[in-house]
Image (tube, rainbow, N blue to C red; front, side, top):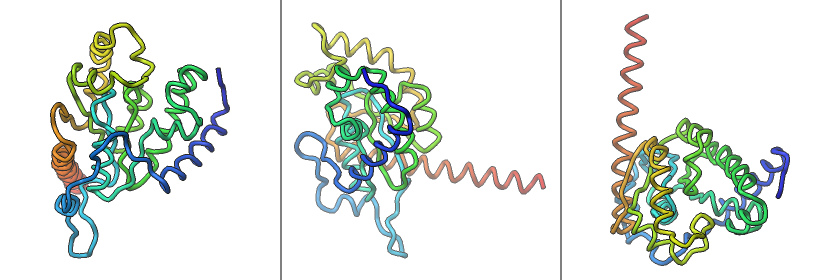
Length: 240
């Protein structure tokens, strides 16, 4: 099992992130491009020639197989933002697949890498961040992410998750009854996922439709935040 000083790990995360931003990896699977014109329709330019966005940073959380990577990639294209997949970033840092990291380095080392990645990606500007399925259930990660900006949680039924992940080599599903394991894990994690900012269901929906809903919900969240800030400022001026 590997132990590593945080300073050394932080340096490797920094280097891997710089590389990932220069050469992003496509999510696995086909059909991750947006229909022609969708990006400009969702994020029109204003009079100054700048793209109108509800946010410049957002994270996607949720259980494995809910569509975080595919939706995150297309959301980043629609909003003209960088895309970062934290699991893929960890594989760049360690030079091994996630199952290999769990098997050879141990879960504690994986979680240390994950926490360092979270600290670094929350310092990014102009990014859509797709989180690993277990990232948001850890309190320190959750607090760091929610302090940075909105976290969109994607939801899908256990049956959908099973169909999407049954041919994968995910360590947590190495069991004789993976569907039962999925149900148990989803029940355990639900209270943590419920602390996200926005909640969207992905069952039976194309990624473009999910992206449209996410952007609409982000605009509503952004408008509410602006209204709250204005009301707070008015209250402070009134008390002077």
